[in-house]
Length: 512
Image (cartoon, rainbow, N blue to C red; front, side):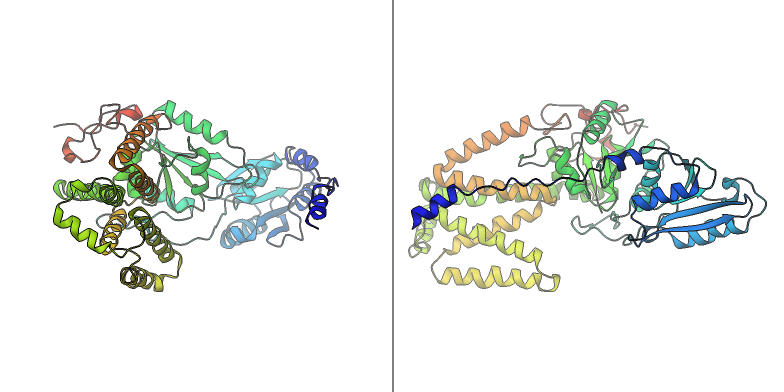
């Protein structure tokens, strides 16, 4: 029976039925043509493109312009166009003004741009513009009346502000630009837009200071954005994956921040940031390892306080990566390093535990990660409850059931809690994954395996680059800079911008 069934599976004929794709070549050709002076023909083309009247939120309103004595039509997407601007500042002046003979004079105080190519007009309509077509005119008047709905400015969720600005980026591009302009009031501040998708027509805005940013670095980012060939990129999280150099790298090479004050600080140092509609954050390029280690609070606090928190963060990172691996290595291979009394205490607690130390620690590490992930995904009111139940009840029950030893619970809890000192989300994931790598290396080969993995990791870090900038700069290779790596210097001594960016103006402060 099984032989017959196997033969049937092998000899099953695959259907070669072809599905003919409906080509949109004609529609593409239409979009590349200029509009006609014939109003009815133009309206017919746009009704076909936007599937009117099936498409309910696209409206065409016909009218007669009194001063020109010509028929006209206004095309808008009602859900993203401001009705007040449309009614009070566009339609009423066109209907009532009987003196002015130019559209620009009739619609005073509005941003108007004449366009002739259908594709350009479609882009403006999709961005919330109201488009005016007039009988006998070979161009359309695109009037900026966009009104995309979004939330107001709030506080950052992932980058908690202890001392400093409480504002965070929002999903609206105009608000984000305003937040940056408020902090950098300089005529050299440039907001340069580029299209990064073919079907959704998503735009990315590059923000930089033209008198500081290196042109070669800027052109590198421009070329990488223009080389993208995708249908849609809806937010910066997707864009980051498209433009990063090493897709499978465990270390992030692009810094993600939702704080405008942090973004502007990088702009002033010669970095380039990317902002995008629908993304409540920005991408900072290029990024070094130290960028993920630093926080804005390091600079807002006094010199000693800021460096003290950095020291704590460095210790926390060390504990997170090595604590569990060191425990497994010592108990399995290097017991001579443990004082006799402590060795006897560890042996007595593990006497009834049936699992080897590696499996025991690995099991608890996985459990801790599950508790952390579960606390993030559940509704906010019960998130703390999940942590308390997981950490206290399950941990205590596991010890009493002799599944794990008490010292393992202490080591894993210390390692897990120390991981929260790494504030950046991407680097936090990196540290958590590296912790498992060192745990396995220590469990299989002891300190020798950990040393070999650490050496290989340093080699890998040295080989990494972010948009041509070495990942460990300015520590290696050395560049002229303010030497802001593990510890920062006094603000009055931070005289130079990062040399690895090759900015046009290296010196940012001058002694008086």
